Every structure is written in structure tokens, then in C-alpha cells.
Length: 385
Image (cartoon, rainbow, N blue to C red; front, top):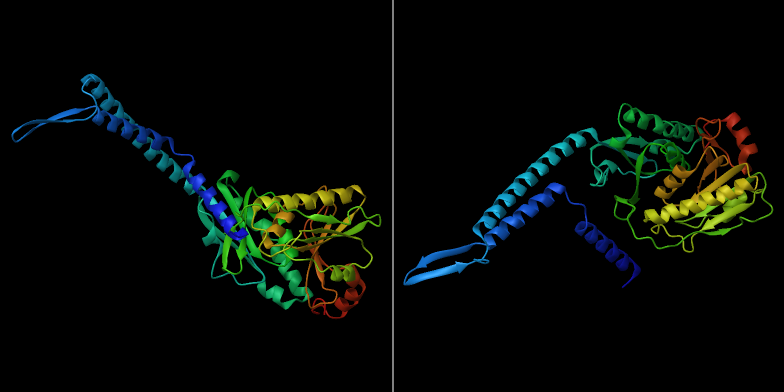
């Protein structure tokens, strides 16, 4: 049995166990007890009936049971059935009232591919109760243009995510709101959205299965793999350091050196980075924890700014941004990878941090001088070109 089949079998077994041992409504338990007791009372009866040619006895249970006990059994069983039915009906009415108060916000981010045929709102897990409402952020036209002005326009829309969510939450109890987030955006925007939704209560991350063209939860079994960390103890660290993360693909390290020629690099790498090896929420949480531990250690060494390069799934980029502590960790710039550009990291997003209310688009260190003069003469110049 291959690894994929084993994983599917494990997932099926877990779902069956959850079904068997799920919490049952108290009313259903009481009703079932009444039905069982009713059957037991029937079993205690002895029934006689006449047949042609004689008399026959059809006997259930024991004739030694006093009739009064049987009557008591009937009375209790009917009482339990009535009470259980009432509890179920009352519970149903209460649940309906609660359901009317509950809301599930589906925040869908469209930037690199068209997912309009499979809206995130329609893929919200059934376990999340409440009316479904879509919040759509579509920056595909801006991202395709790849000009400085268009990338900044896309960033302006991303910066509004927190405001749009807050407007939906206004006047509502946070316990009645669930937020589901998924999207295919440039990595810096994903990281930023993660930071913007950090304090929005219960958040469920979903990701896009490209081959199946559908949204999916992160419900695979954890394989136990973690990052191998290189360069953390490098003595050449200065006030600024590059942190590269190879999770779904291997980071273009030659491109990193070209874009950040004077900075040391700390590299977090899975043993075998693959696009489809990040579908476990437990695994993503562990990888995110490793990144934060590395960042905290760099901060302890005196690093004042981080240049972050991520080769991860969309959901992991969101999670890492969601977990990044803007108050206590160094300011971070997350960069976009463009294979055809030299160097292949033409722009990044400086994340909001101490005293910086909103994010902004910045150039990599290698392009600061040349980009400044280019933007002064032609604001719409292609990024990296």
C-alpha cells in the first residue's frame, strides 16, 4: 500500500470513529431509552390466543413478572418518549434561533487564477453553522499588469481587508462569527492578509486543489516532517537578514543572493519540498512555529529587519502571516518571486509594524538605486523590467 492510500485509509478510519463517538443530543438519548424500555415491557408480556383444535400460548418474557411492574415499565417508557421528543423539539427550535444569529464569512482572494466557477462560499465546511456571506477580493487585473502603479493599487485593496471584515463584525457577538479564508495571491499579499485577519476570532484556512479545481480543508494526516535550518548560527549576521522558506518548492537561492547581495541567508527547508505535502493543519502549525522560533532567535541576535522569501502553499503563507507578531518581532518585508526577472525578486511588501499602520510596496536592496531613477521618469514602468 502506497503512502497516499495509507493516508486515505487513515482519514476514513478517523471519520468513522468520529461518527461513532460523536456527542449525541440528550433528547435523543432519553427518547432511545424510552423506546428500549417500551420494547422491554412488551417482552415481559405473556400472550394467550385461541387456535382451531385447541388453545396455544405465545409467550414473551416471563409470566413470573408481576403485572404491576409491567404497567410501571409502560408508564416510564411513555414518559421518557414524551420527554425525549420534547427535548429534541426544544433543542431544534433553540438551534434554529442560534443559527439565525450565526454568520460564516467566506473571504476569497483572487489574484493569480480564476476560481469563480467554484466560489469559496460554496465550499465552507458543513460543521460551520450559520448563514454564508462572501467577501471577495479580486486583484487579478492589477497583478497581471505587473506595473508599479498596478501592484500598489492591488495593495490598496488588500489593505482594506481588515476594514471589510470589521464592518461585518460590527454589532455582532464574536462567538457567532466564523471566518473562512482561502485564495491564490502573490505571496506577499497572502502573508499580509494573514496579518490583517490575526485578531478576527475563529479563522479556518482552506486551500485550492489545482488538479481537482476545488477548495479543500487542511485535513490530511501529519507526516511528522519539519524544517532543516541552515545559517542560523552564521556569525556574519548584520542588522538585516534574509529568511528563506522552502516548503512546497525549493527557493531559488541563486536569485536570493542576486537580490540581496550583501545579506546573510537563513534557510528553512523541508527534506523534499513538494506542492502537495502541506495539507495537514498540524504540520502547518509546526512549520509556522519553527519559523517564528528562528525569527525570535534572530531578533535576540540584534537583527532589526527581515527580508522573507517564501516558497509555500497559499494557506501556509496565510498562516505564517497570521502568526507573525508585529509588536515584538522585527519588521519584515516579504518578496514576490518572478522567475523571468533578473534578479527574480522584483518587489516586496513591507508589513505593518511598530508605528506603521499599513503595508507598502518596496524594492529589493539590489534594485533600490536603479528603481528610484526609473520611477522618477516613468511611474508605470514594468516591475523588474
